[in-house]
Image (cartoon, rainbow, N blue to C red; front, side):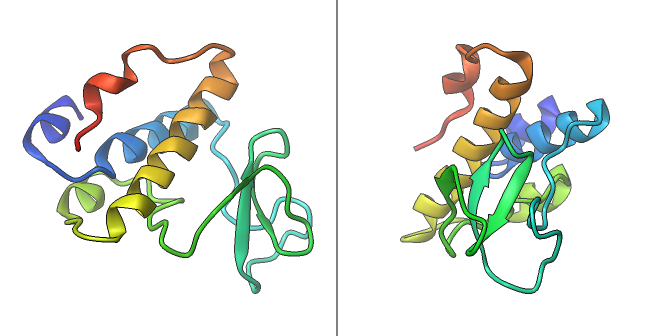
Length: 120
């Protein structure tokens, strides 16, 4: 993972690592609505108090934009191949923020070193 982080400029590599870490620990956020338990409608928010993403009728927590790719991607190789440009950067930063908040939620403290991995 550290090699992938050091060789890839994709902003999705660190979030993919966080999702994989959470999955390994058995606390990976759900990728379908955690209240309604379906995936048909648009997923519009992310709330770790409820355990993941929520649909329009169940929404709470932080909003998820349609420009946020990889909200459920935990494959570092896939993330490393993603190239970002223009308006897509905001969506990738959004995914990074959600992944970071999910880890912080489970360890019950802020990650101070996460800024080392941020690329502008």
